[in-house]
Amino acid sequence: MLRHLIVPEDLSAAEIEAVFAISRDLQEKFVAGRRDALLPGRVLALVFEKQSLRTRVSFQAAMTHLGGSSLFLGADTGFASSRESIADFGRVLSEYVDAIVCRSKAHDTIVQMAGVASVPVINGLSDESHPCQALADIYTVRQAIGRVTGLTLAFVGDGNNVARSLAVVCGLLGMRFVLAAPQRYQFDEAFRSHLKAILPHADIFQTSDPVAAVQGAAVVYTDVWASMGQEAERRERVAAFTPYQVNAALMAHCPDAMFMHCLPARRGEEVTDEVIDGPQSVVVTQAANRMHVQKGLIAWLLGHA
Ligand code: CP
Ligand code: NVA
Image 1 (cartoon, rainbow, N blue to C red):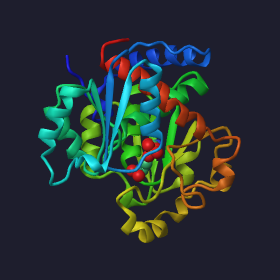
Image 2: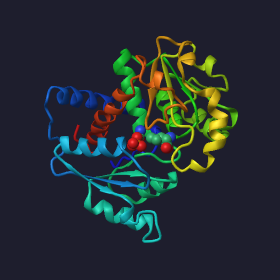
Image 3: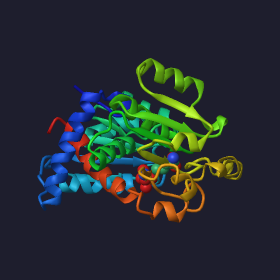
Image 4: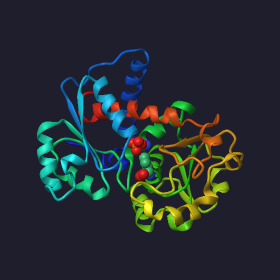
């Protein structure tokens, strides 16, 4: 059956565990110097409307390691422009490749692409969701601590694409999720109702108190205050989020917590150098795990586990 990953809730908890199991196996082999060619001749297309380092390179390297190949399709293909419709683009691209990763400005663009594609479509970040990031992050927590159920992830910052996806993956896997943000940047009513509907028993809270959020947390997570596409709001966002900076004073309230950030970071804004470069930080490990988890995801989606 054709499956897509548009939002993390497209996967059940059991399916996430199945993806993680493949990822773990492939990661162990990779570390031991083995690169199993599970996907010979398979082609992954990456259609990107926004900048990327991690998502782009981790998917492209993953396909090469798995014996397949990838094509990066940037602005010169005319995707999501007046050149042709998203539907025509998606239908034709599906004839050439085995899976599509799409990074779009509007979430609906990826939804439209998945609606017409005859191959799996993976969301490589939209304004609403970043499922591959959240999967790799929770895989990283599991690897570091050995479990995730019952632990708390405190997200201190904007209730953005990354925060929303983390809330869902935490909810699916039994982790408590707390968002600390100024009220106007917390999850809106529509997303809160959606969370209640899909995860009625999940522990997902929001507060405007960053200290209360991090106390007892196993993970403190942050992301930029102005995401790609929100540059015009930068000044007002910096003013609103300054009390939410993740710095040594805030981390002193949770000395045993891991610090996470999806990167890229604006050092000196949402996080200080001292924290992101400090002993609690796992930001490079979580970026590295993007590749391992996406290998598991592609193998699972293409039925080659
Ligand atoms: N974290 C992340 O998705 O990074 P890129 O924007 O560089 O892909
Ligand atoms: N929230 C950020 C994440 C980048 C990986 C953005 O959308 O720009």
